[in-house]
Image (cartoon, rainbow, N blue to C red; front, side, top):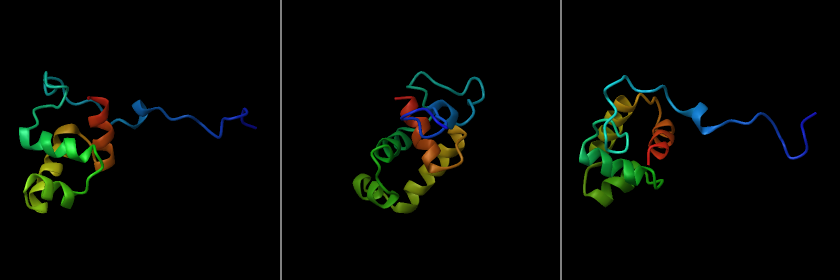
Length: 93
């Protein structure tokens, strides 16, 4: 039986973060690991919950360009999924 108010095991944000990046990759810009200014703009809108299509419209880009930036950020961050990337980014801002 669980304690009153406790509905199950607790999960911390740190357990959801992807593994740490290889040493030397993290930079002084909020831990955004060498991301380009364009990737940072996309990431900023991504953390606001915007879709690729909405980000493309806001930044006057094609949706495919946004997809390319997201893929690049996934690679650089070591994340496997968009939701992991969001948690990763929010932990560094």
